[in-house]
Length: 66
Image (tube, rainbow, N blue to C red; front, side):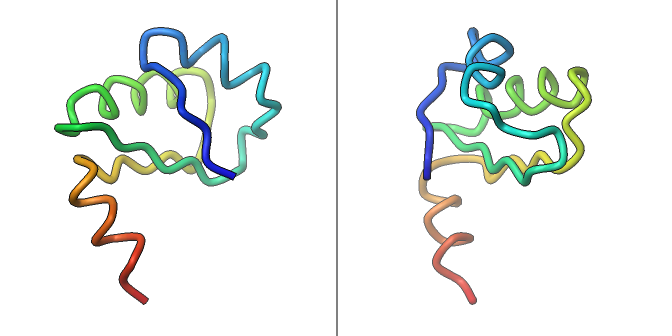
């Protein structure tokens, strides 16, 4: 169920993907910087459960842990 959305168009694309504002959205990118920008954009749009997992490496670790 993962989506690859560029941070520069996340506001438009998240609406097209029909993600609810109370759904959990997990963000990550190569370094964690762009996912942080995307997180701020989504929060401003009213998304309630937006988590920035940082870099791809950090996201892999977080998603693999129980």
